[in-house]
Image (tube, rainbow, N blue to C red; front, side, top):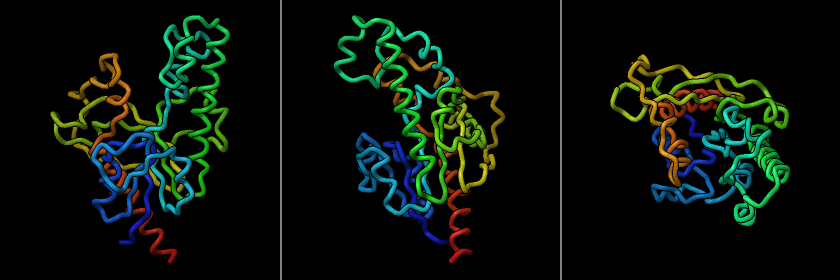
Amino acid sequence: MTALRVLIGCECSGIVRRAFAARGHDAWSCDLKPAEDGSNRHMICDVREALGLGWDLLVLCHPPCTRLANSGVRWLHEAPPNPPDEVTPAERTGWREMSGAERLAIMWRLLDEGAALFSHCWNADIERVACENPVMHKYGKARIENFEPMAQSVQPWQFGTDPNGPDNVKKRTCLWLRGLPKLTLTGTLDGSTARDEIHRATPGAERKAFRSRFFPGLADAMAEQWGNYAAEAARVAA
């Protein structure tokens, strides 16, 4: 099998990186946070800084997506009472003293920033790209260059085999794919016992990290199916 150079963007857990590495690929992750597993195959940087390093495949796992998600579109019309995580320290300090118009201007700026990150990765000079994101609202779609509808949406439990395992949860995951096939479901579960722990996560400092963690069954399917597909294409083209 042809080994691929694979970049896993916006991942610090190492779950997807390790899935590709276990199949012989030269897999690296990058995030603004250090690798949770202490790997030396992790870059601490904005993913955009790493896109030009000669990758065969980019998997963008958890881009900052809150402002693009349809579930949060209301905050573009009525700014939230509490400052979002993405604001600057100065904006956080002065949030409650700001006018509604000032808060809304910040929310729209954060939308622009989130869309720019997604767009930059989607249009990267990399032959095969997969971007994960929740269902996107119309304002986000309009800001992404060469936007295409998502190729597929899946649930973690569709890749699980153990009712008590980490994959047996509900979390709709939407995939935008360029140069890659849709994933074939590999699980044996039917969803009837899937846990709702992601959506019911307790508010707090760790909620965002908990909600953005990836799932091993889905990661294995990505590495096996996309890795094999891209490796075979590279072999044929050689």
